[in-house]
Length: 313
Image 1 (cartoon, rainbow, N blue to C red):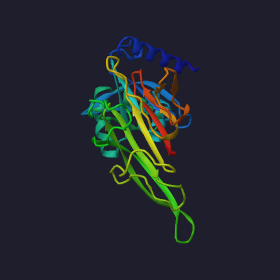
Image 2 (spheres, rainbow, N blue to C red):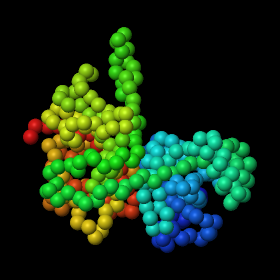
Image 3 (cartoon, rainbow, N blue to C red):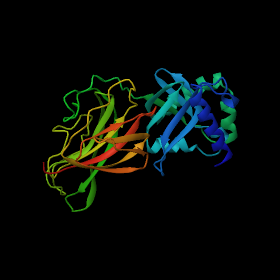
Image 4 (cartoon, one colour):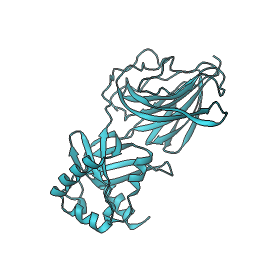
C-alpha cells in the first residue's frame, strides 16, 4: 500500500471512530468520506475529502493534491455515478455529476474565496480542476413496512428519485445490428426505504423479437413485478442501513431463479434456518427460488443488480 493510501486509511479510521472529527491536515476542515465503485475493479473505494455545501448539494473538487492527473474517485463517479457519503455520524446515498462550465465557474470562485490554496493546487496541477456536485438521493418514502407475510413485493408507487440510463440493441431493416433505443429508467423508493429500478424485462420465451421493455422515458414498466415461467426481469435494488431497533424484514417468497452481483457496499443474504452469507461489492449470488431476505447492518447503502428468471410454480 502506498504512503498516501496508508494516510487516507488512517484518516478514514479516525473519522469513523470519532464521529467525523479528525486531526492532522484535515483538522478544522469540513470533511466527508466518499465511497465510490471502482470503474474497472467494481470494488468499493473510500476517499476522505474536503467539501462545501451549495444548497442541498455537496461540492467537491478533483484536485488530487495538485497532481497532473484526476483522482481515481473522479473516474469512478463518471463510470458509476451512484455513491455514498459519510458526514459526521450520518451516511446516505448520492449521485455524482461534473458541473457544467457556468456552474463550475460560480462554484470555483465561491470556494477559492474561502480556500485560496485551491487555486495553488490548480496551478501546480497544470490542468482544469473538475468541480463535482454530489446530490443526495431522497429516501424519505413510506417506511411503514408490509406485514402481509412477505409473499408480495412492495408496490412501486412512491416518487421517482433518480434513474439509470439503459441502451437497447436490435436489428434494422437491412439486417444489421443497431442501437434500437435508449431511455432513463426511474429508481423508485418503496416501503422500507429500498430503491428499485426495473431496468429490462421480457415475458415468455426469450427471443430476438419477443416483447421486452426497458421502462425508459421516466415511467416504471407496467405489469407484475415478478416474471412468469420463461420470463425475465433485470433489477437494481438499493438496501439502506437497517434500524437495529426495528423488526427485520419479512422473508420474500418468489417463484424465480435469481442471479446477481453486489455493485457497492455490503449486504447479508439470510435464509429461514438462520444460515447467511455476507456479500461485498463484486461478489455474486444464485438464489434458487427459496424464501430469503436481504439485510444491511452496515452504515452505508448496498446496491445489488439481479436478473430474475421465472420458473414453473
